Structures are given as structure tokens and as C-alpha cells.
Image 1 (cartoon, rainbow, N blue to C red):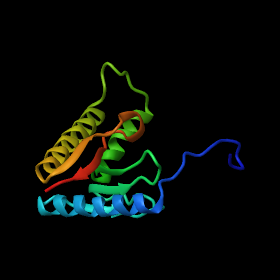
Image 2 (tube, rainbow, N blue to C red):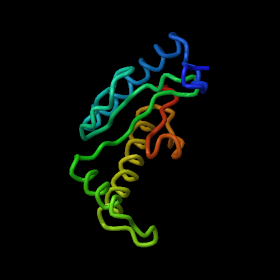
Image 3 (spheres, rainbow, N blue to C red):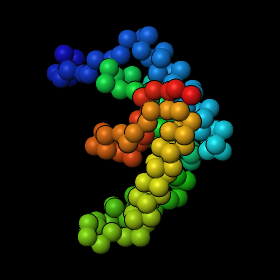
Length: 140
């Protein structure tokens, strides 16, 4: 238990993190070869928020390699601003619908590109990781 009174999930051992780092590097290389703007976020570093595919290693035991799509800040800001005003879920504003569509389309494109390059990849748990792609393995 931590000083705050709750248990933190256990982290993966260093050898598992090293394997995930190597897998993340291979995923970056495959996405870059396909012409996708891609960058890595290091352990403990804050996401950079640049547009393109953001690849990072979740250090938890149940974690892994994740690829998330970042839009230009303007598109994300427009969606956030629309949400801040309160929305009717049955009639979402254009800014939110467009942002969500871009996220889903790019997730599906990343899945297809990674699968074609030999990666075992799937949609990540949406409750935990939103529209991220979970990369599990690689066999060229």
C-alpha cells in the first residue's frame, strides 16, 4: 500500500520492459516506413501531444505497447470546447463527431498498417486506453 492509502498496480520487470521497448521501436519503424508521422514517448515522460502516431510502453504488468493517434491541437481543442458547453449525446456537435471519426479512422488505419507489417495488434481496451492500438507481438 502507498502513502495515499491505495495499492498501485505492479510494474513489469526490467526484462519485460526491454522487450516492450524493442517492440515499440519496431512498430515506430514500420509506421515511419508507411509514411505515418510517429514518435516515441519515453518511460515516465509526459505525452508530447504532437500530431501523428504516439508510441509508448505502459510499464504495468498488464501493460504493453500502445499506439495512439494525436490530431492537430485545433481539432482536439474544438472538440473539448464543445464538450465543455454541455452536449446532448443523441445530437453531438460537429466538432465532436468529426474528432471521434478521425480517431476511429486513424486507429483502424494504424491497425491495418501494423498487421500488414507483421505485428499482432488489436484495439486496446476502450475504457482504459480510448482509441489506442495495443501491439502484442511481431513476426515479419
